[in-house]
Image 1 (cartoon, helix red, strand yellow):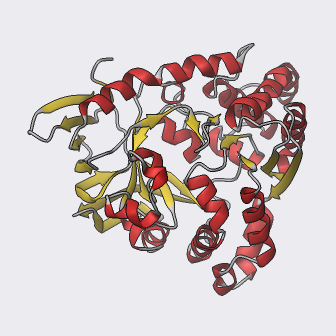
Image 2 (image 1 turned 60 degrees about the horizontal axis):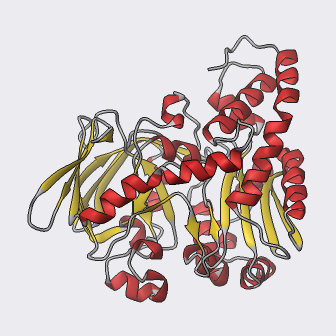
Length: 426
């Protein structure tokens, strides 16, 4: 861990030394994350504060053969002003120009790169109904775009880059330049991008998923039982043809890509009708710039029937109120506590990072690739088979150091999967 007594001059010198690593990181995002093809349209979303890194990603995309790059900038302060001054009703519809942009790009076979970097509390005090309405509208009305991402018709990658307001949360009490430098160091480290050849490192990392996937897909568990001393006691049923996935993904045409940098999880979509019990959060959830912390959910027959939170209860309620599917699970993900993010002892206040430090669940839509033949089924057919449908997908972390997970077979045989927060064979 970098010491807080670094000076701004130390940070500036450090940033100069990181420059080659950051450029290799941009290459990793383009070449392994989105895996840009020759002549392909690339769509980049990036915080305007990190325009320097955005330009680097664009340059690397063209170097990889991109036919054209479209850039959409984001800015926390402008987003907040919009939510402060515009009524909720406006957010219930996506402007036609934005629908046309996203849908036409997806239909043309674009790949999408999302650079995350924002203030975890950018929308603190904002009515959560407004960002919830905007998110729901995009998911429902930008149909080609959403279908392209959800059904792996378009390659995509989410990665992070520091902004000052985010760095202040992760490294409080530091000078801004020092905090940003430290956050860059942390991001490059946990993304396995601090070495001389991150692309080769990622191929090796991808191979490490195989043992866990082989075990889980070979066992064909009927359900998993989660227990922890914080009160978690949850049984999650699995579909009859569930598939565990992790690491590298593929488009429906067989084009490989890594949707998340970093990634440590193996995951599947449960039977959204067969979830019972109570689960407590292990880490804060940052949703639309608002923190939800120390919360719990109780499920009956797959549906959340009771919940509470010490911090951000209204935001949690807005998530659950998105639609009926938002009250059901679309994902369960298993991650050992013996991973770089967890071992860094850094709370990133970002789901992209914190979900890779902890077993997690997700409310909302499930994954077609997590059901045998799922890409050949309609959304309605997937739902009939237990794969959840919704206009949202919200991950939340539940992996405590003492979490035990038991796999239960159809005949009642019980097999330890996790013991004290790690794979039973670790």
